[in-house]
Image 1 (cartoon, rainbow, N blue to C red):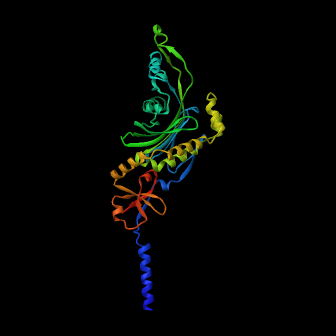
Image 2 (cartoon, rainbow, N blue to C red):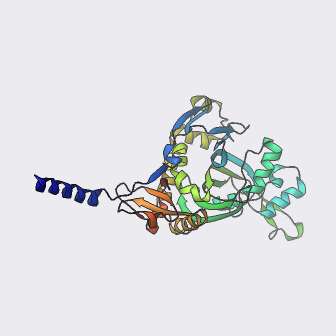
Image 3 (cartoon, one colour):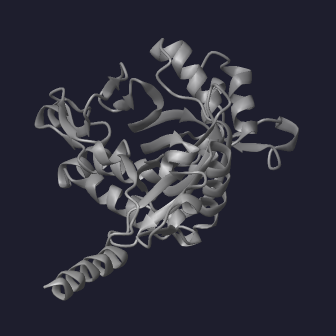
Length: 343
């Protein structure tokens, strides 16, 4: 009897050593893992947004319809959509020439897009946003992107615009990150002479540019990996109502036909954004992730059973006794975190 009891105790001890030595850790779920969605509709456009977020619609017409979705607690978490912006010229020479004869015209005030690329459009975004906010919208609707720097061009959408991964500084000079796309199109060419004596060498093209399907999403730099998928999902749910189609000015035949042909066009664009994002170069994620962790006092570990990545307090791996949680490899910096491990 004693021998059997001794064997039972020994067996329990072995089980404890093998399976019970894992130190229980305190995990707090990340904000993104707790996100739920709610439906937004104003009769013209509908989409899903994170619960508690707000939608601002710019006071414009159907052609230039634009809205911004953001976290009211921190407006750096946001995405913006715009059907069309116009009033741009192809070069600074064309803009200054136009300004000489028509100084009050919008073409003379908005910064030129030169060359005619998505990146050039966002490089002059601040100047044009300031003008639009102050003279047309009378609000601070458009955000500002200081020190805009493209990390990587991820390719094109199915309607032609580049998908850019970029960093910038917000109004508080804090590091931000985002994905940006827009399609810049010329409506043709119209040359005028700026010097009668040199007709052939002084021609300048003053035909305007239009920019279509402006889509951008931003968060603080260290948090973008966690929120990108959520923001992309919201964009995929954008749909325009029949009332919007009826109210749309038929001057924009190409744009309205695109919307009519496929109400799910933004679902397709978001798929391309997500696909490009997943194929991105991960060197920036690794460097910025390590810098962020060092600054904020974290070390990253992953759950070997679930694959979830956590930010743990600095020193966790020294304190922890067990095999379930291990330090991440560099490639895991591309993954969003599922939560935090606290003391």
